[in-house]
Length: 355
Image (cartoon, rainbow, N blue to C red; front, side):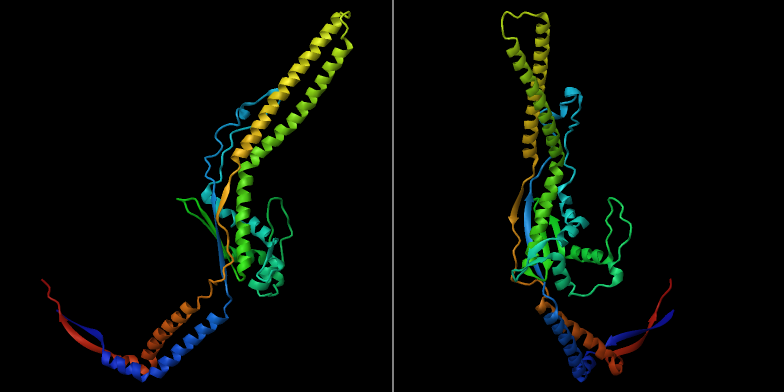
């Protein structure tokens, strides 16, 4: 059985002749690419990256009770409701904190120092340096009329800004060492360092508040109960002393007085024991709060870099030159039917044997 097929080969001598013949075309196209790349490289906005590193305290949670504080139930007819506190926010979720919308809304309101030494609100800096003072459209400023509780109502301008900042602000955690790295990219090197520093501070404060919020509530609760118990104890103490002075004469022996004395002393002992027990638990709660407050060590503070990260002019020029040469050669092959000169088409007959 016969079958014919075309085989296309390249004539390298003809290829070199075509390249030499179209050298000016290739040079022109390559020059255009290089000029375009150079214009972009030398006119693009300079960007600076500042990076900081923090080491969070590794905690296994607060599995132990506050010295029996969680078991202090029913004293004086009320329940403290203290339970073991579990640290539900894992370290690998820490970077998500500075990707949240409340963080960016807070960031916009902060005042930072720029490279000129001026104090500038970040929202103004963003509008001037990143948005190039572009006047926003009216539709981008419109917001929904409703304002339900617990829901953020933003306009399109703010949403676009947050989306852009999420690309400029990055956070990562090394799962082996636990080191959290936060970096910020801004057109101003000092502003980049300021934003990175604020992000580190925001993260540490957020985690600290989260980890200690319940313990703070417990300390405040016990503090109120201790104050109330102290007042009762002082009143019973004064009543006891006043009654002792009133019936101090040994000649006075009234059974009614003895009954009253026993009642006063009983109330005094009860209020005294209750007050001392609450005071003890209150001090234990404050000690536990101190122990459970996380510690963050700054390993590397943000630095206002003098070296820009973008644009990488050398790389842009290299890619422009390489891309220009490649595109120019491809274009030269299809220019004036040069491809037909370079390629050779041959018809080959093949035989297929069927058994």
